[in-house]
Image (cartoon, rainbow, N blue to C red):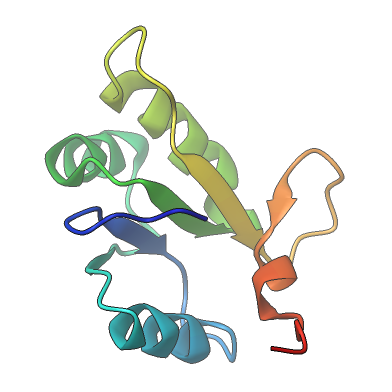
Amino acid sequence: VGLRPGEVVVLANANSENLAPLACALLTIGVPFNPLAPAFNEYDMENMLRTTKPKLVFADADNYEVVRKALERAVPRGDTLPSIYVFECTRDDVTHAEDFMKETGS
């Protein structure tokens, strides 16, 4: 994924069996993360995303659209939007967070 020191990951997820392993992995590799309430409305989400300037964002299928719209407004025009990884989602047009959970053999 290419995270650098000081870059932040946002976790806009409800509690699930996927969240704890992700948080532990981020702590293990020294990446700070900001857990956000998945029920935030678009404007509160935008404010937090503008404040934290995340490199990656994890969301749930239920709040993906809120997170996406908030990111589009929070990130300055011309800057690259952070990738959004979605847990437990059947949509084909999102990046699935479960792909991070697959064994790599290393």
